[in-house]
Every structure is written in structure tokens, then in C-alpha cells.
Amino acid sequence: MKVRVVTAACLLALAGCAAKAPPAPASSLQTPSAWRTAAGTAQGAAVEAQWWQAFGDPALSALVAAALEHNGDLRIARARVAQYRALVGVAAAGQKANVFVDTAPTRTRQLAYNGVPYVTNVYQAEFQASYEVDVWGRLAALTDAATATYQAEQANADAAALSIAATVASGYLNLRGLDAQLALTEATLKLREESRDLAKRQFDVGYSSRLEWLQAQAEYQTTAEQVPQLKRAIFEQENALSILTGGNPGPVARGLELVQLSAPVVPAGLPSELLRRRPDIARAEFNLVAVNANLAATRDQLLPSFKLTMVGGVQNLKWHDFINAPTALWRLTGAVAAPVFEGDRVQHQTDAVAAQRDQSVYAYENAVRAAFAETDNSLGALARLKEQAVQNDARRATAAETLRIAHNRYRNGYASYLEELDAQRTLYNADVGRLQLKTRMLVASVDLYRAMGGGWAAP
Image (tube, rainbow, N blue to C red; front, side):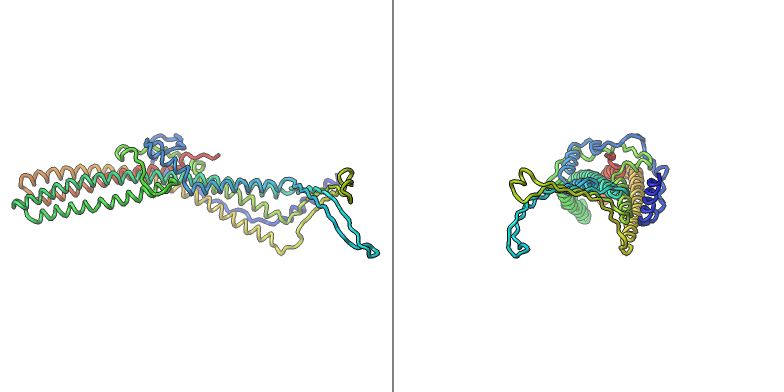
């Protein structure tokens, strides 16, 4: 009993030799009880992992699938995951015994005591096994740190996949919006051409002034100028999508028209649920776990280490005897090693890792706050865009009625052609605004899917 008490007292005294780690900072994170903007219907429903299929466009689904398989950034992220998975095995190997085998046949020529040279042969084979007893849990802490770092890299790869899928979806929807604007502009250009030709004929017969003809010509040229601008934007958007999907710059297959696409209803849930839905938050949490484990391992460097070493082998001076009846040799060693004085190196290392831990705490809080803001902003954007769409519909209806009245007045000779041109321009701007709003609403839905984690679940 006395031996046990003395042993326990010694262990407690040795444990007191560990470096001192400052406490972690108090958390200042507060989770809001609800979003600032109402999330709409379908509360509590889960987001599907392949959320992009909710848009119902096979071309969009094919692009996202290609990007998730071939995107270069994702390949890099997955290679890093494989790297850190291997490093977990490296760390875990430190908790296991190491066994080495060594064979060293030796032939030497040396002098005897009487000065006569002679030659000797020594044949030997030896194995050595060593094992460090992890009394203080330092090796286990290093393994835990490596495991958490691997998990953080896996979450980082998942976050990259979510970002790539959302970027491809947004890019495709913007492309369809540009396609719709180009179709509208080309159709408007034909109307402007007809109006210009009509104004020219009326000017030639003296029915209208040269000013009206020049104004119609200017409207035609203004519309014609927008066609190559839109084609350039479409060209660049196609190239960007091709690169995202791991290909070379080139055309992109289309699916549904913009008017056929609709934003699916996205459930938002509660802010507290977001903490388990986003891979970037999981990454920050795993990073914090890893640095805490590293802190424990660094703090315990001042504690003594206990190693067991066993060496065994066979040896003889003659090859025949070495093969048939070698002499067996062995050695068993128990070693205790502990630093005595290192100029507070370990304490300073502990302080440095503790500062890294504090940074990880703040990074985790920042990631959570950013997630709250992104989700709330996306919900607010959808709500405000819907309100704006209502006003745009009213503006377009007014513009269409204005054009009808202006056309009738001009046809009956009560107004100049300039009034009709101005009404045409107003209606065209309203139509362009409608297409842009539709595109922005679709992209805002993608942003909300991204902010909610895109159906991600911790492995």
C-alpha cells in the first residue's frame, strides 16, 4: 500500500511539471432566435443534397455533376484530404511499437597483441523493438490532433464542392438570363428597323420631319449596339462555365428557357440548426478541436517519457555455425527521459499554441456569424426581389398602355413619332428589368441554398 501511495504521489508531482496553458477566451457568440426575414413555407423540411435538381433543368444538373467530378480546385481539395488521412496513420503509428531488423556480416583485418595481423569474420542478425508508454496521453493527443485536422480538411473539401455547385448554378442561370435579354434585344431590333424604315418613307414623302427619321435611326443604332455587348457577355459566361466544369473554353448546352425556370421553395429552419448544416462551420470546429489537442501535447513535453527497448539477435564467427548453431544474444532496457532545463522553450511553445487556440475560437465565431448573415441576407434578398417584381409588373403594364396610346395618337396624326419612340424605349427597359429580376431571383435562391449548407450533413 505504501508503494502505491508513493507511486501515485510521484505521478502527481511529475504531472505538476507540465507547462501552464492559459484558459480559453470566453465565447461572445449569441445565436438569434429567428431570422429577420420570414422564411416562407415548408418550414422544417430538409434540403436535398442535390438541391440543384429542384430547378428541373437537365442541362443545369449535368453542368453541376461535371463540375463536381472534374473541377480542378475540387481535385486539389480531395488530394489534400487524402494527404491528411495518411498523416493520421503517421500520428497513430507513434502509439505502436517499432520493430527493426538489421543484418551486418563483417570481415576485419587487425593486429594482434604481438603485432601479427589476422582476419576475422563476424556474422550477426539483430532485431530491435521499442515502445513508448503513453503515460500522460501526449501521443494520443497528437493522434487526436491529426484526426481533427483530417476532418477539417474533409469539411473544407465539402465546402469547396458546395461553393463550386452554387457558382455553376448561378453562372448557368445568369447565362439563361443573358440569352433571354439577347432574344428580347434582337426582337426589339427588328421592330426598331421597321420603325426606322417607316420614318424614312414618311420623311421621303414629306409626311414627317427629318428629326423624326434621325430619332428613329438613333433608336435603331442604340439597340443594335447592345447586341454585340450581350453576345460578348454570353461568350465569356460560357467560357467561365466550361472552365468550372474542368473543360476548355467552349459553348455550353442549354436546357429550359428563363421563363420556364422557377425558384423552388427553400426551407430556412432556425438559426441554431444552421450550426450543423454548413461545412465551413464544421471545418472551423474541427480546427478548434485540433489545436486544443496540439495544446495538450505541447504542454506535456516537460513530463518524462517512458520507453521500453528490447534487442535480440544471433552471432557467430563462422558461417556454418551461424547457420546451424548461432549464439543468441539479447538485451532489455527501460528508459526514463525528461528535460531538465531548456530555457522555458516548452512554456513559450505552449503559449504560442494557446494563442493559436484563441485564434481558432475567434475564427469559429466569425464563421458562425457569417453564416447567420449570409442566410438572413439571402432571405431578405428574395423577399425584396419579389416586392420589386410586383412593382416591375405594374411599371410594364403602364408602359405597354402608354405605347398603345402613343401609337394610336401617332397613327391618327395627333402626336409626333417621337412620343411613340419614347414609349417603345420605356417598355423595352421594363422588359429588360423583368428579365433581370427573374434572373436575380433565381440566383438569390441559389445563394440561399449555399447559405443553408446545400443539404450537407456531417459524415
